[in-house]
Image (cartoon, rainbow, N blue to C red; front, side):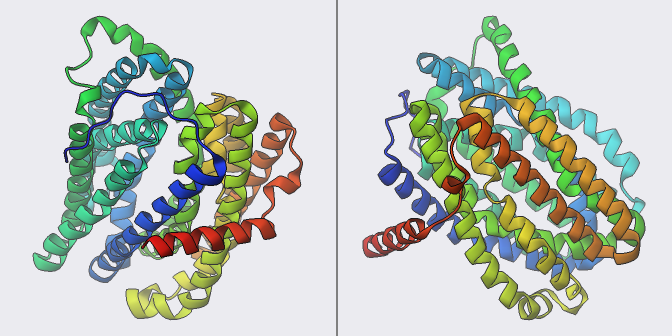
Length: 444
């Protein structure tokens, strides 16, 4: 990796050209990573079986929840850079140092909790805490790359994680029959290598390390990041609380089956995550009206692209799931079909998050949104999971997705004063997809 990030102000982006190009380039690279993510699901399902897969998923859950709380230094960094572009290098150095500190402290705090709650036969999942610091560093590096519009390097980091994780699982699980231990080790290795590559690639912006005298300057990023983190933690608990309730009633077997449905469904967010990635730089670097235009267009394209992929996945899932993952996972088909409407509805969330957090820096909107949504999801989960199992969990999750997105759209419309029709996909959006795809194919 010889590419390094130079200090520069994000350029002026044209919504019809630069953003579109960034979206399709990112979609292309993320599509290339889909077989890797799919392969991870196959290996963990076929070789760990529902119980082992459930232990693996729950083992990563504590790290994921902690990362949701502590891993928003990058969001705070982008917000600060948008306000003071001339201090980008200093801010980035502080963010790297802060992420490393939070990662180490968070891992130390997690060890006794994981040992306390992990089932006796699967205490090895505690090793996942080693991946927390690299995970936080990668998130911060990725945020800076997005702010600078360096999408290719950003995409490379996103590709490294599933590639290394899958390779490690093939060696450790398939080759050496290490089971859950191999799965956790491979995940930690993927996180660590992605962070190492990101640090080397951006070394010109953080080396030499930030001076001790500037540690006090970390306080604003820490404060803003924690406010966003509380919101993200609530949101993640909201969309994963059904796993906790499901484990209580149906055990690790139910968690393993349901987690397959959620992991397949969330692959549909390939398009929306690519759009959110391309939207970051113009959303923070453009004037207010252009930023709103870019975000509104991102919402429309997120819905359109995810809906198309959802129809395809729904049509093939009754055959794909039992054939590829095994007959024991057949109940995941019904759960996936129930999840799909909610997943499509929630697709624009990452795009709107760019506006709320990075553009205007208002975490309180998402905070109250998460509180309301987690309340609705919890009620439905408690009512339906005891009698309907994984299907009840899917219904609860879909209720959470739809209610969250409905409120988020209402708030966005109230803040920006745009008509709701500008968030609904139309014929022009279909033409844009067709034209851009044709150009991309022609260059290929």
